[in-house]
Image 1 (cartoon, rainbow, N blue to C red):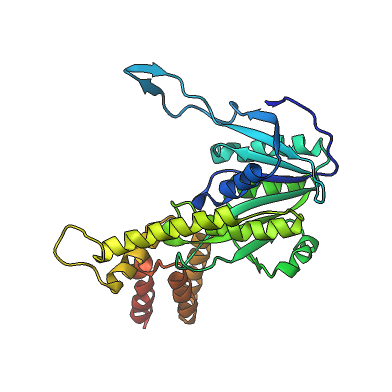
Image 2: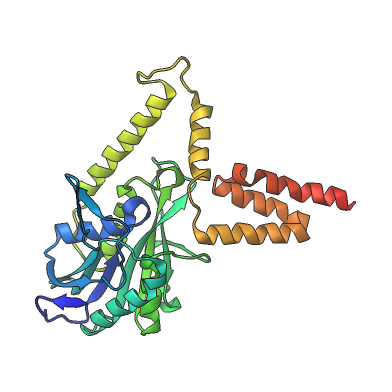
Length: 320
């Protein structure tokens, strides 16, 4: 399943793993490290056991079988920094295979005496695309959180980290590895857009922690370009750039579009669960409705839940 093309001699390497996800935050963060540092590929994960074809390819009317996603292991011999093993997965398998796949990978890197894991993820928030994203942290152990205290990160006090970028950290903890997931904030209405700002914020922490001499300027420039493209789109919608149709939209219309996009974007599972829990609490104690409303506004999804929210008060009036 994992084919090694070489067997590097590494000293207690740090392990970094990433798969594609929202805003391409995890994958792009790890990919940047691979591209700007002297990483060398030494193993390939062929995970046909965990992936099944979802379609066939067609070329000039002739059917062909698609290639299944793979993953690649790279290593870096540190000079003034720790040795590093970097894994880049081309795609995430169905969730029922996620833990088994994670265990295969963890078992492999433990062979090289890896003791610490980094993973990355996006954290959708009700922020503007021009805002400087914060970095949140979730760690396998309390003492690991203390190691990152100087970076003044926001602790993820509750919730979930879905997908392989979270599950592999849990698999590592079961096998006595320590580690963290660093989550970069992204605006809700840009979850399908590459977010280099979040990547940059995460890499500043990783670079400092591992004593990597990273030049983040190319990523900063890419972030500026993407921000400008989003601005152009908004200007186009507002009518500040030529567009067909009679009346351009005003600022309130643009804000509504952002909110609507957020409402129809899939919420993280942890947010769904918290909102459902607050609805139950508000049904028992209507004074909790204020807390519920704040949570709905935070995620820009009040409109989606408006009828259910107002029903809380109708049922209360009927009860009287």
